[in-house]
Length: 439
Image (cartoon, rainbow, N blue to C red; front, top):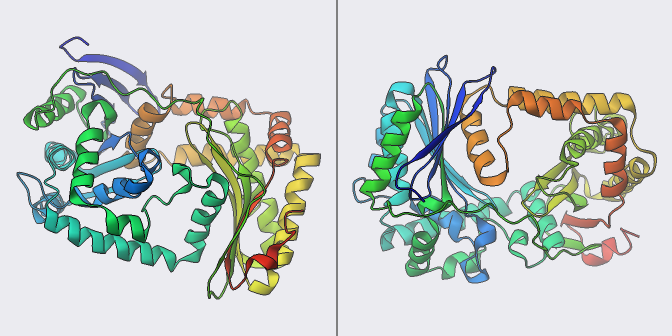
């Protein structure tokens, strides 16, 4: 790679601003969207490493790092990190996903240099002190316990495990009590220094900013950390990986709960599948809102559940489709029967043209309304660079949604909803209660 930075203009979005991309010699990619009408800026460092990159022995280490990087650097204590951002009315946080981790701050435009310095500092020069490892170990174990006390959330992890088994995608992002208890400071530090490299990272910023200034300040921060060697940016994840999956699984987690929680679903499409827009519309028709079929059937007409919805999850090489419902234990069989019947009906008979138009309208509204703040626009840049082959403008996304036809949605339904289903249940049940539930 050449020793100079390479910059290109990616878009001039009439609904936003100018999008530019610079690749530094060390492989770090910097994307910005300049929106002069805003008075704030969101700044994030996206690391293309998540929980699916962990071995079983390191399960939960990415999430552990998310906590630890805020505990102190060579130049800042944990209090300094939070206090310096809060002193200017900003906010900073992080989150871990299956395929990436993000550290971000949102500040007034005048305070962007501070946000860049703080976030880059904690990402590149964390101390990972032994005492902090032990402190955060306790915090994470409490977080896992809190999650286990929320069966409506936990059942999604049970469902993912039912589909993917022991594959990394089937594990909890947070790890388990056993894996977190066993992780050593040496293991965490090794993962950090092997994986958190400029070539695996994308810097994204959106708001009232100047691209050249952002590049200079980010470059200075990484040079100060000694991360200026020449490298190529990390390639996007392969879309041809064969992910082991199991079909027809029933997993029951017996627990004393007031409600029963269930997820019924199957393997879905990867994030760049040709049918992804049609599946988005289909998901809205099935369980994406109050007008959806499942919401109307299960809640509005029969009053069997308060919360019922369908969802999709996409990864580089696979995906999930599922339906969640929380209901009284005595109503599980009826809710499950209605759900299975409705999915089978849509697979066989399709959906109406009017339903497709409504589903597409919901998709378009979600896209546009979701980009009304700098944080969501920053996320669009970071995810677009890490996860997709192209950065689509708002107009291009709307055009692709408009191109979805009722026949495309019906074809997606016939394929997706005819796949073998798996079931996850949490409640006062045992395995025998669901024998034959998928027959």
